[in-house]
Length: 432
Image (cartoon, one colour):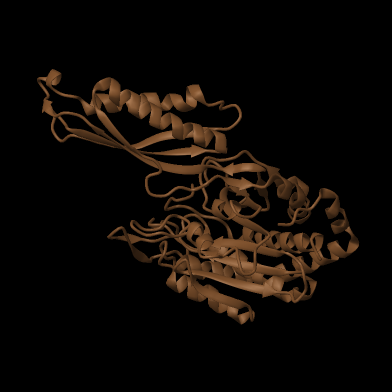
């Protein structure tokens, strides 16, 4: 694994580097219309997680047209391509996610989605309601530009088009975790990985970043409380799982509010579902709670795990009930952790590309991203790219994962330039 001192980046600001940046700008301008066309096609024909078959074919066709070494069927539908410069140097990975969401599109666009798919046994509408269509189009563009600049590269570029970032269907595995298990960071061994996520709430032309924990670990959980059923008129004959659940829900909220030092890192414990009973006059045998934990550092995550088990058992015991805690429930994502040294090394590249005034140090968020699985293995940098039109306020900009979600095509050219310049600058700084 290569590490670069900040001083090593000073030569990057020579006239030759600015000339190289000018070439990137020229090529990005030339390919912008194609990037937009790719985005429109991908948006019009989205596919759900682990079902991105036609999407993968579309992406692979473009990568093969660049004469890259292309592998398909990675983690079911993933596509990986390698650009080999023929010169020694690091292996830089760039990643885009491919899956859409079971969301009906309500935007009036010529390229709006009318596609449908199957989600957990149900027929559902499908939409790119989180911008993965733009992620793919930008990475396809970066692949084109970097291939055109092959003579400027030192090392190899690995383009990763990943399925199932939004989570695999019930009973299946998928996403970055499976790609890592199947060796996507090996053969050749990746030294560093970069990724961008479009943001409907950030202005076009901006890039936001945060060193360290930038997106939260996600840990779903389930608690099943076993009591003793009785007539609602005779509660003393019961062991009431509903009352036990109420006490448990309130107590779990004190993990964050009373046990974690939240001035350092935020955390969340949310109960999103509660089920128990079916009549007003019957105290049921059991109640089921389902929720999620979000943490931004490893110590907080470990503390919440310990506190959850302690509180669930203690409250159940105090009520004469039994409780089963399943944590994590079915999947979990690590913290999306931007390597601080790598971040410090590469932010000058982002500032040169987007402008210093448009490179924004942002606060972390409690949403999650499975880009984190790559960052567990190699240093990584994951940033937010602005996609909100300048004439739309943050308040009026539709949220991600909603039928009205929208990001402007005009934001993608900067994404192509950022991915390309990050690759070139890292290679230049680590040339053998």
